[in-house]
Length: 407
Image 1 (tube, rainbow, N blue to C red):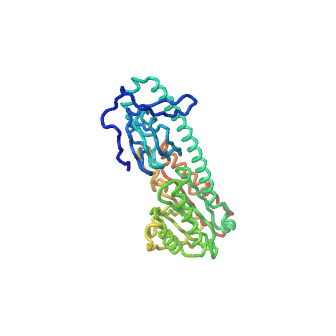
Image 2 (cartoon, rainbow, N blue to C red):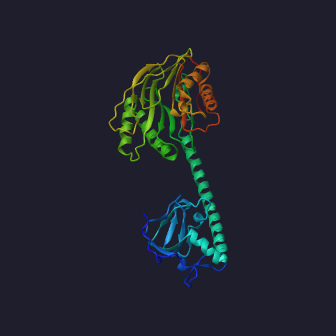
Image 3 (cartoon, one colour):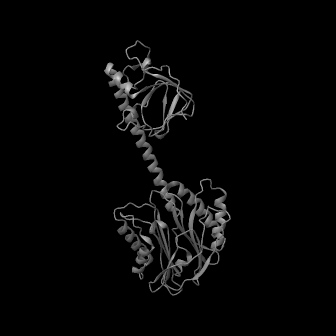
């Protein structure tokens, strides 16, 4: 909070009086221009207080007499002997273009916009000097903002590469032996996102398939996913049943989760020799099962709480048996919730239709068909949420050698 200012004047400034002058450094080799002390008000601020915040109404500018001010948005410090606040005061919207936080106890002199304009009438040369200073400061702020944006974009590109590298690349041994086929695709709404999938072999020649959706988007969601995914891999590697995997990871995430983030999750373990599978849902979208004939049905599962919400939440698994050429599809809500210009959702009904129309295709082609369906539905609407889809087909011992591929 701003400390109430102590003013050296209570009446309107007397522009005609003879007064002491404050020299303002305009940052160039030209002599500094001057500002009349009688036209300014003395204000005191404590360390850590704001002179103003980004977006505030810009109704005055400041000369810093003692102390320093930090502008966090553009990572700049303004020291004693400099002017601050003139860019926002003379901007078209008269709004602060950055926040200003006192790095030390501050003594400043301020003057309002109307007072500045009145003084300009009497001292036109001062108006020119101040306009030059404002233009120079504006260009400097723009340069700093561009550099900061370029650094951020570079860091986000690296973060995306790291996140994509964490997705599975090698084929599970069961896929190599020709018993299953796997395909998956992921499209973050931003550079990085909170959706993920994973598949890997565990004890007893079983395959574990995971697909999840963390709350939020961007970097925070991606970091939470990295933690959750590592815990899930570790627990699944012990050969536990899906509901046990989910329950243990939920307890671990709840113990240290100050931001109350959560992950919806679908977890499946599959015996690649027999097609026997066990599934568990933690607040996730219902998976779909397509038969060899092309019929698609919703997989009826008990739905528990998203992980990271309630430490002692209980979860249940359901056993199913995949027959030869049957395919299971798991996806995140970015698929069914994708909207068009009329705010109409893509919906599970349209997703099922896409899967039915590509019954005999290989899994990569099936997922490509779903993506084309999403694009046709959205048309020119931007992607509003992360998207992930994973498909698992049980081929059995009689099938041809399939591929597992990430799109």
